[in-house]
Length: 91
Image (cartoon, rainbow, N blue to C red; front, top):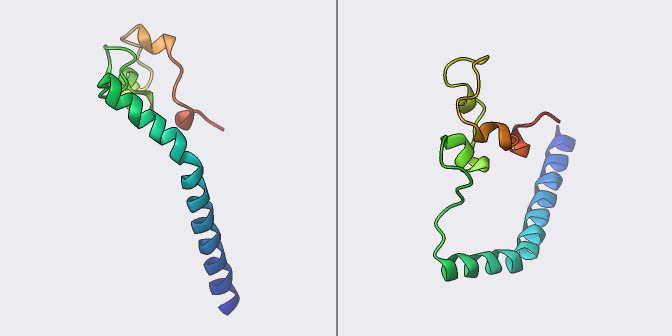
């Protein structure tokens, strides 16, 4: 039991160290993106204007393309032009 507590504590410490280093590495890119948003007055990414799941690919969930039923046809042409976001594709 003590071994399990030590291992999980070590893993927690390693995750915190990794998160801190990843955050420090991302600061220049986030600063550049923040300045670009301020300069151009951007609000949010909008690739297509038809369906909500094609407007912002990272905000898509598993069920929005199949609002009628799972085997329904795609109602909007932009759904066939844009692939599903990476986090929804199978590994």
